[in-house]
Image 1 (cartoon, rainbow, N blue to C red):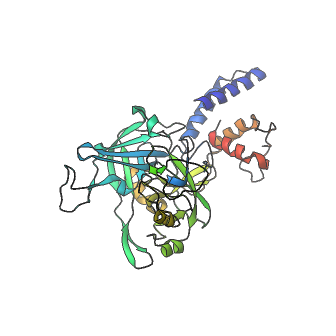
Image 2: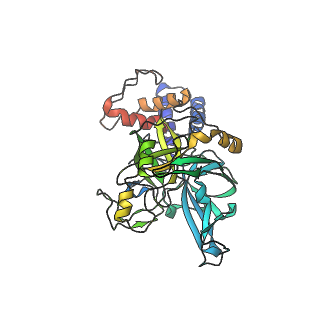
Image 3: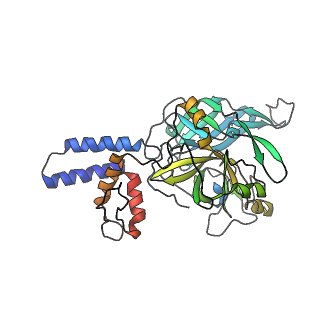
Length: 392
């Protein structure tokens, strides 16, 4: 790893100046680097650049917990794509409807009696791609085979303008045959054991869904074509209130769902199962899984679709299901905002002290990172956060 190599060169240089033998220090630093890399929710950038057909292409290094789910049944001409999120070396989360497909009477697999009957994918019909920003760049080394799929069966009441309807938690847990190789671009996200959103605050979503053919500064417009490019996109949304969701007709229950949205940006086909992410104390926390989208699944944007884009999208509130996750996967939720281990923060600080920012002056890091009075110049905060998360 380039970053790791540079940090080790830095240690060697400092050792040569002091005239001491540093083999132990280097080994210790490698151990710390490896340990910190395994921490959940760590990414090189604290805030990704702002799928999301209104979002922008992003690199997997910024969201190393995002994966692409591909379901294929060749004899039925079935090929579906969704987004998933890594929660451990062996497990990922996605939307439950992503592990199903509809049987139509115009193919050889139609079994009736109802057109559109839903059938579950078998584990061997699903492939998970990790560590990629675009499907075109994927290799067999990025592909993982699925061992088992567990779907959460939990129903609850939702509210909208007209009536109360019965809905289910759209959540699926995917177990892999082989452990993922944890690296800079493949890492698990943190899951909070409790999360209370503040309406209007920013939150981020990443997905492999359909996007506009031409990404530019102008807002989406009628006639824009949506297509699946295989490219990972990230978009900044804002938390919406349950009342707004109910008023606009988005099915939701504030105990089980989170509403978030933004004008001119939305969740599209292929984004289902993707993570709604909130960043706190240098960690990425999974607060929601994309479930109900207000955005269109059509090939072209219509005026009706753009009008619906005013609606927030609905996400499964993951913290509500911590016990189920622990029972099935042994993955435990952690307190929201839990600090990184001190040795990881100290390592980030050590690297930070030896680097100058782009303006050519050093950052004042005289105080401990655990001290609220740490002095960091305003213009250097973004640099500080990047190094804090990169660990060298």
